Amino acid sequence: MDQQTGKNENGIDSQEPVDDHVEHAADSDNDTVQPAQQKQEKGSRAQKEIGEWVKALAIAALLVFVIRWFLFAPFIVEGESMQPNFYTGERLIVNKIIYDIRAPKHGEVIVFEVPDEGRDFIKRVIGVPGDKVKLEGDDLYINGEKVDEPYLAESIAAAKANGEIFNNTGPNFPNADVTEDVVPEGTVLAFGDNRRNSKDSRMIGYVSDDLIIGRADFIFWPFDKVSLVKHG
Image 1 (cartoon, helix red, strand yellow):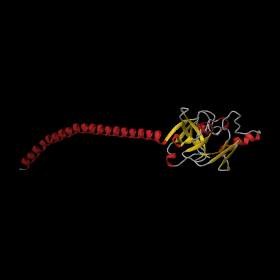
Image 2 (image 1 turned 90 degrees about the horizontal axis):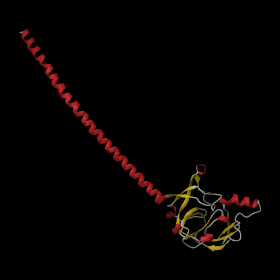
Image 3 (image 1 turned 180 degrees about the vertical axis):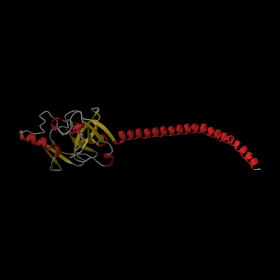
Image 4 (image 1 turned 90 degrees about the vertical axis):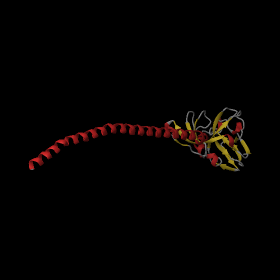
């Protein structure tokens, strides 16, 4: 009986490799299925990543458009009219939204359109609506009070040291002196810092609010001049 049982056990044991073979075959099928699934998953992930990048680039492009056309704009200085504070070739960032929030203030450097010239000017706000402005040589008066102009202090002092007037425009400069003009509503009076060589409100008249592009806030070129613009 023991021998018979042993044979039966051996017989059963001899069939175990068949079971092993079936298991290996199943494993082999799984091995062939898994790489295909992995490829599909990788492809799906790649498509998602590409989609995310496309969305990110689209948002970035939209932000650049909004910032460029509605919030800020670059401006290149041309000419000598704003020396000694701004020089030809300097590049500025103009804040286009600030005057949608509030009105221009004394001493602020603005960029505005001049339709008759077909180009934009950069000047400094001297008078705002209701101001009575008087300019005599290097002396500026607003509403009867002499006004300090720190942005011109060094230049005026240097001219005086040489016995000269900084705002010495010569006999042929129109409206070199301003005699208590009152600035109308909806406009500003704007002068160049280099008043002896500046085409500004003394020639082109008051600047309408509708023509003001914005306030010059930042010099970003050349690198050695990178700085915030000083207003007033």
